[in-house]
View 1 (cartoon, rainbow, N blue to C red):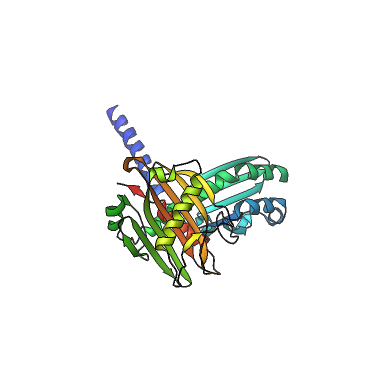
View 2: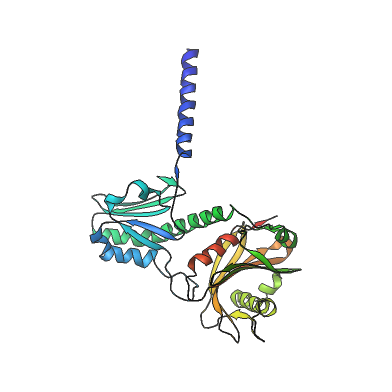
Length: 323
């Protein structure tokens, strides 16, 4: 009896180890950030269902000066959904079937990976299920892409000791970024691009300065404009960065490292000059230190795509950890 019990315990241990080993042997997912593979037959793709997918998953990104899609979509017919195609990080599978439903699977063929399945008996059912579940799918894809971008950034990190000492937080930036301006309560960190640059600003503001009235967006913009006038200046006299007033900024309420945060997206321009671009601003409420810690990313890349550059800045800022 003891031998039987021992054999059973060993078998359970072996099977659980084998299962764990199988999970660890998953392939690494592939694909560029903000890319989506859609598995769907040509007839559906060229009709109302395809139009619905494009309107949701290729909708314009908030806060960019020109329209760029949430995801760059590539369509594949179902019979190609095998081999290397299953390595894609973000996959959407749409099929006509006798059974209707929606399922979102993690790490089914590779890791990290999300595969969303939508099936319906009719075009009307497919359209309904896409409309009903698109927001959840997009949120999951975007979260995974942020994590993947942070993983890539972590492969070669800039020394953030200066950030820790000045602001008591840790931040993961690639080594391509360099410290440009270092002051008591202000840092400007920048990466040079072939046609421009990507920047991260770090500064802090007393709690009462953002909360003196109910118009938080105006207070955030007022502060960032004062920072721009003081620190972000052009080569010509009386040129400095301010917020573009013609486009109302987008405001979201989120949490970063467990703290209440105002996320603002909009456009900036250089007053009395022609330079311009998008920005993303995070004002993190740090009650312990009676401050808002502000982390901002902005991009200058004229006549070029800015979506992935802004995604990199978002990935950097969302890595913040308070010490």
